[in-house]
Length: 398
Image (tube, rainbow, N blue to C red; front, side, top):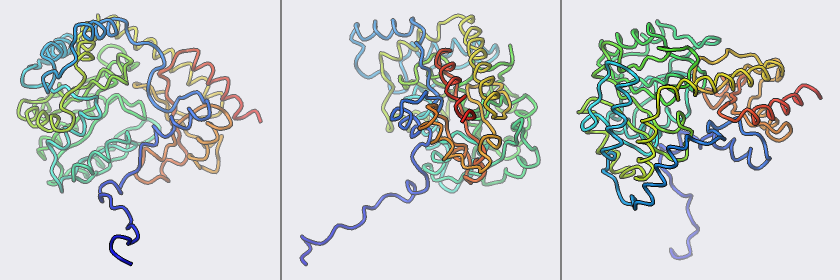
């Protein structure tokens, strides 16, 4: 057989890409669509964003704001972010010219940060259960995840375990507060422990605060790590419009970091995506200008949604700890699924019951650790949650 007619070889892909799977969360959305299930899997709202955002974005498009903004973000948007941070967290001052980089959502913000600040061979501490992007981001950066368990039922941190995870190889620790998937909000004493260890080992904090305004602890319930003494000059704060303003499809996020770190993030961001959508950054300016009452009403509305879903889940037989923040409920499934097959249970929920959730195994390095767990989300209209509640009664009725 000639070279021209030789049989094809197995396609070659990178070793990095072979170490993780596609997003399980987004796979559940595809299954939900295929089976017309109520989607409580992927964390996107099914209600409208504030009208001011749409009006500002439309006006920008009508004004032909259709070309590149400055790579690291339109000046007006960066100034608006800095002003909003100062209003929300007195004492936290952000220079929009040297400390901000606007990105294509918090997802790009995280990978740009990792590529800019973490080297191959470094270790990155990640709390488990984890949001599924953090491990692949670490691997794509050439680093190695070092896992530290959050312990059920209250998702507490064991100080001894956290201390043992730090070493001279540790470059960064990823925080997510309020936390997806558990709903945990890190307390001041926990952040002070992180600060102590980061100073001792010269470690960066990369904190994902996309749920900063979605918590149920009242004023002061969320403390940004960047405001904890000892972390001011070693923290990269990641955020986005997505969750707070119900525009997950806009893909507009940002990083806040000391100037030297921001300069590196901007360079990587430039070659990843060039920049976020210019007219949607105009919508972001409007978002940053919303009054404080918007955030109070947001938290109250999510509390109502949380309470509705939790009541339904409890009636169905799931056990859980009510989340203090974010908009997810991690459920123990032993009462309804003694066999402990989270993937099979979720598929049954979608195909037979008509409600989509996420298998707990997707939040753990060892899938066996999540086999008695599934996650539901509640960023939905009350009518949507009531429809899901009605369908969930079928799980135990026959």
